[in-house]
Image (cartoon, rainbow, N blue to C red; front, side):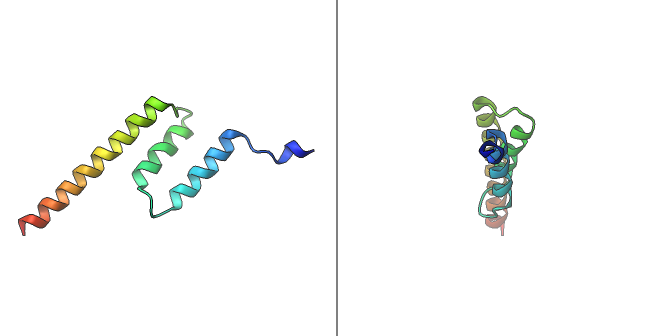
Length: 73
């Protein structure tokens, strides 16, 4: 039967996120946030935007800390 090979939307998203987690060119914290929401079956627009904003703030703090260390030398 042809439908045996058709993946569910959840399977497609899970496979996509697994590939993205291995991509070193992407921000690991961002991809992890999306992946965790999906695995917890909690991937809504609002929650996704909140998690991405949290990851962005962490990244900005890290960049600022690195910039301050360099300028102190």
